[in-house]
Image 1 (tube, rainbow, N blue to C red):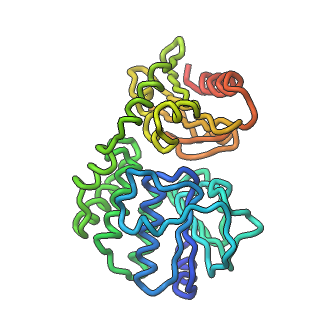
Image 2: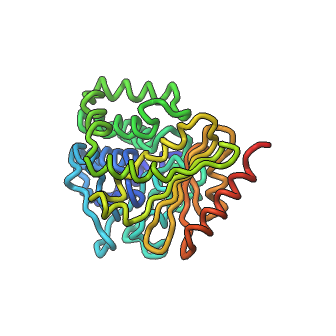
Length: 319
């Protein structure tokens, strides 16, 4: 839909809750903070809540300290805005029929997004931050260094430092504009990519020690058990981007990460271009993009989950 209705509501409303998906990464946090900083600059009252904490590598972002980790909301807002969230359930602490606001605004770039908001701005883009940036500019809000840093970080991480197939000329153009507004590519990259803890390196070693690959070499997978976090002093945020190791193996078409989460398994899928993994993820109740998607499978053993997922990937691969 046109973003004009969203712009109109933002201008009229005074208090906003901005949130994103569980286990937030660069685009989620960058988009939320960029929008929060922008709306605050024009006198709006803004709160940013997430189910899970901001990953350590993103805590350098301007105003990251305003983000509150919550399990529920007992306040009322004029509007709730979700960014980079393919489905309302992925927020974790919001219930569809009990939104704590007059309206729900959904800003997202996932092709599988069902349009769950009262107002929806769901469009094809490299990152949700591109859509947030459009809104900021159309509202006439000056882009500060702080906003630029958040938007640049979102686009950089979502494109894998401009290496992924989703990188477009528009992504480069927006990134260039962010640099012109004060974003520092070197400083941002140092924080995001060169701040590994010893624990994370040990975790990586444990995960890769048990890397699996199919007989035809086209599917590779890794498994992350919760005990690994205890053994290495890490957390689930330290698994971010580790799926790129099996994906980088020559000949692999699809990489799969199986991450234990209580009695459930979180599945991440990455494609090297020959199959649309968002379609596969949707079959298991998830979603995402053609090259990167995910889902959650509940109350099943690892063996059963692996059999279901890997079998389905095998069937989807071109013969």
